[in-house]
Image 1 (spheres, rainbow, N blue to C red):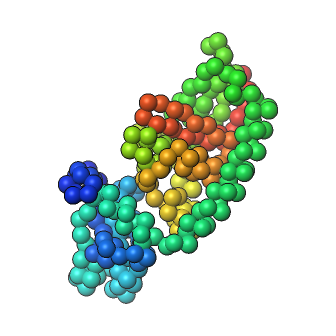
Image 2: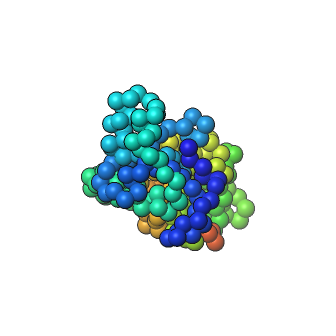
Length: 245
């Protein structure tokens, strides 16, 4: 049912992307948050969502029949209201688990970054370029490549909207340069970790580093990098690093 390309006018959030949730999520808290996979749109920013009670009815009925649909009474809301409902109804214990994972991952990444700097002196090169088609990050000096890293795009922080978007939801990125990050999403789905499972949420640069550290930890990457531009920051992990030939 989701229609991410249609905007609706919301009194609170203005013109925003439209999406669908059950009636209970709109005003509820702590009701649980379930989303439905759509084979035609596997990476939606705002997948259709419903509460634990609706999930129980759906499980009992075995499909979205008249009974399940009537109980859910699906409503159209904007993406801003969706984010609020998701935060209020997502299992609260996920925040504690995420904080623990962030702490472990940040410590792990700091050690990896120090090792990379000691071995390859990445901070000393005046230029870097990343390439989607080869999924490489190249550090160079005076036009000569010095260090080459195989990369995966983790995600990006927009300083204009104050949001994070995972790379797997970014249609402008090539699949080969982001495919491994889907394993981080799978981990988030399995452990019900909101920030890992959801494509898009309110965030700042610190959140970007945290998600990048988690990705590097879970995927056993060699290190990470942040690429700034006028719109915000793009975050990468380096899965392999070597001297340029």
